[in-house]
Image 1 (spheres, rainbow, N blue to C red):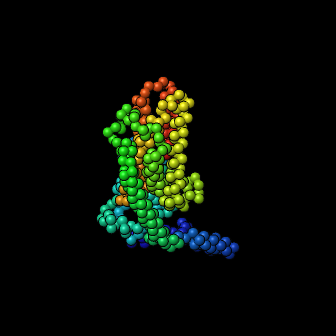
Image 2: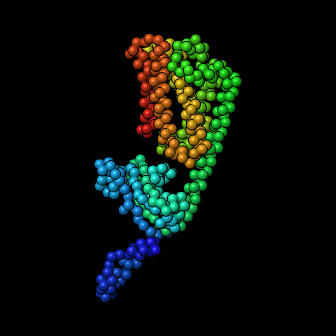
Length: 409
């Protein structure tokens, strides 16, 4: 009834019958022109015909949160054109034989009753209201759509069917999503097994070395480790093995972060080299990340080495590099383990967890800066100007570069 009622209200034009027949009773030339115009518009309408029929347009039901009233108000284009979140009420049971069409001009996040459900790509996305009615029977749901840019939502419609020109659009999206989730879980399982194996091997090979890097009781007590020979042989014997494991730990985290990141995020290597876009979560991608992080570690050592020698602080080389590795490793163990467990248990929600992991990564970098500064400053006394100049080059500037990459690219 609802479908028939709304479709009957749609008329091809607003010309009254009397006026139309009045035109026909005019001269033959005018009749020919009228029929020519009529045929033109009819052919245009056929060419633009969609494979679905509009049941209800929900654009008039949009709501926005108005801070001045501290409540939800009706969407007004002049007042809310910069809003990045739009809401509306929907009762799936009432429309369960139809589909919800969302036409987006930017990718966005779909919420139901303030709980995130999924990320919606740019373009048209269709939801079966029958499926929603089974989850929320006899219940009004509060739908929210959030995007990073304003003017992202073009239309929200209830339609009678999914367009026939692409009947498998929902099935294809769901299939791709399930395939990615299965691949993500598979890779996370392999990464977890590999990390547990290499750490078990390291514990058997040199347990003293591993415990020195993981010891919590001496986290801020550097004086007790001054006689530790680890300071003097970073690239020798067991330390080389530990550094390779350390790079594997970081590689695991960044491969996961790249896999769940949107395509325009800085962690996605395909953003910079198109040929790498097809290698996400592949072993080629893992190898590339491993080599990048290995070169980054060597580059960090040379930054510390040249800056400390330039400012006459060569005593800091060993202690600074050791503290940099130890503190980073100490924080990345729980961070990487958390990301792997999330992939195993909540692979369908990793889009949501991506932002949290990104902020946690920034927090780790800030805490590492503070802890490293405290530890190397307590090692001995330095001229304040030399020390802060050295710290600016070796730690503060790299941190600002990371902030720029994380949030402003």
